[in-house]
Length: 603
Image 1: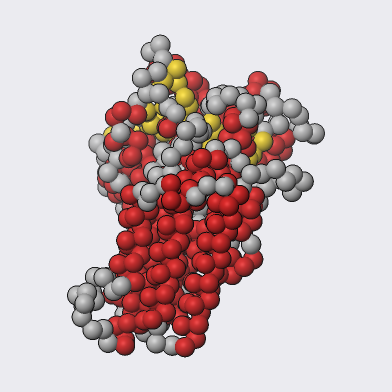
Image 2: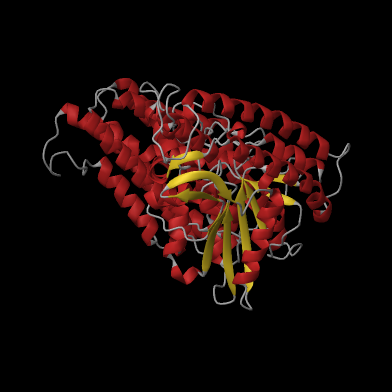
């Protein structure tokens, strides 16, 4: 969080509009994934899907978590890095041959069901593309000189996937007649649409993976062992086939009802989940750096997850929420206030005062950032960065003092604050990530929230509404008299220095003779010291000041997946131990909590 609501990208508007704001991650000025069109930035505009938008695009965005889990699977990570053992690749090719044969058969059945000549022709062309894939796989087998397909029986994940595809293509779908009965022409058209709904995710996912992997190939080197595979799925012809499949799904879905479209969505989602199972079922004999918990030894070390709250976990800054509570619950200028109660400003006075505080904060914050930047970039040094951010800490404390002295936080009701917290929109995937960690007692992991938020009750209410009992929250606290705020705050975390001190204290307290593996997730300059101090620092959001300050002080911002691919490659080559260490000066940028979940927890 950045102190004062002025740092939030949202203007002060009605509280109801703030808490109903749609979930989003701000788009970043630095690229995260190499193919941003594959998974569009999670902006408010992208999240609110127009009814006329492509069906497949809508599903792809909705099930982005599944695509991230496939991308970050140990198999995909090793393949992208070129470190995948050849025996593992042979096993994968054998399973994929079994799968592609069923895939081609599903296209054939869909073609029989389509009642439109153009649709039949399009499906026939897509089936030919699958047969070309099989030829590529056969070329691998010929190079190896042994038939790995015959040597590798179908595994359970492959069988589950192929049975699902063929059952769908045969009309064994909820809402259709029992198998063996005659289908009407319209019902047969629905079967074709359902079949494409189950097949489209595979095409889009492989097109996505191909582009992501291709972007990481070193153009001046030709020694990547799986370059042929990557170039096939990143090729213009395969990308076109994926788009053609999506176009065909849209066309076949036009006459369907809302209920029938829901069936297609379920089939699409099921196929995405089966893709994940397929990738995670590939046997590996080599260690991998992701998921992070895969090589984590809970009996030897504790996994310490730290997170900021405002604009890391939330869509809006909590200070904006508290400001709106104060304004909308304040008395009008001509309204008499009951005797014996805390005297409050009128709503008009509050709005004016907040505006002045906001303007002053924004102007002085920018001046402070400029004053701490070195004239030229310097090599990363934690102590130098710490010293520079002491000036920002002094500024934050002065700004907070102005807020208290203004009296704008007087008279807020605790129940109003809690209700606002319960309605606060959190970033997609944040709560589910935290809950999965807390529910796995064998993981030996802690979650700690470090926040500038003025009122810890707001944070607790927000997490509680999502079913998360967040006990380890280090934030500031309102002072109350009979559940009404006095306008005073009990300060615990006001600055970058306070945050990193709390971070160090918690690690010290939790050590108990064991090692700690620390991960810090944050979005602003206030998080910078914790981010670089942690063994793994992950940046979310689009704070330009964070990148400006970090870059000038020698901090590198590396997109998470490419960074992991490089680390996996170095680890496999023996150039780097699989060890994460703080104060390296390297921070990883993530596009969403889904990406963080995939890296740390995996499936």
